[in-house]
Image (cartoon, rainbow, N blue to C red; front, side, top):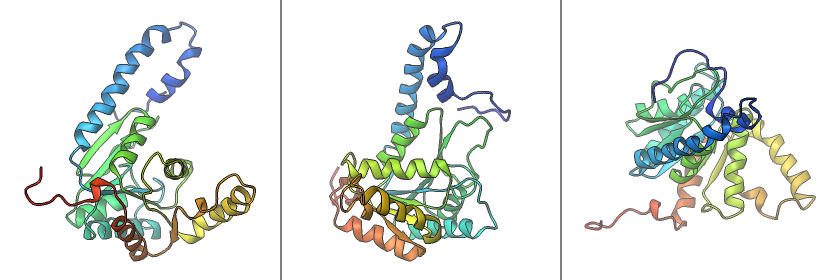
Length: 247
């Protein structure tokens, strides 16, 4: 997708969700065509990622860039995932998305970025080997879920929290296999985990064990070991190595 350096007043997501209130009622004519555009994003994503090997998605803030401890750890995570045999997927932007892409690229692995259209352009970072830009958040989220077998969340803002709880909800409800989820950073995530247990679990808003659908750690090696160990007992076909001569 050709992207402009100029800031955009609105995004495709915004125009889709707010078009009903337009005074000229263009939505009567535009929305049916938007369906085709949405369909094209799914087709392009499925086509580009269909041969992706086993992969781990790393979420994190765009605002913590090179020079921060979080960026250094993100870069270390990308390198460690490649060493463990995984491709690395991120949101493709700067900061804690760039870090894992950079670590994966420098380690000789496959570095994937799934970008999103925002009012002010970010663009894919320079360490992405395979990149896609999406207009619609829901299409992009589907690609994260469909082509990842584990998720690591570094510190981040509302977008990172949205992605974490999306994955937790899909695992909790059985919409996807019980993929390993790692929350990286005990200081950052500890308060949220305590709230989940003291409010949601204690009041019966989630079930016993839902507060254990993730690992909270500061250790990159422990995070990778947890993912590898969990994958050894999972049944997802994408985690199996094809037998010699098999199609």
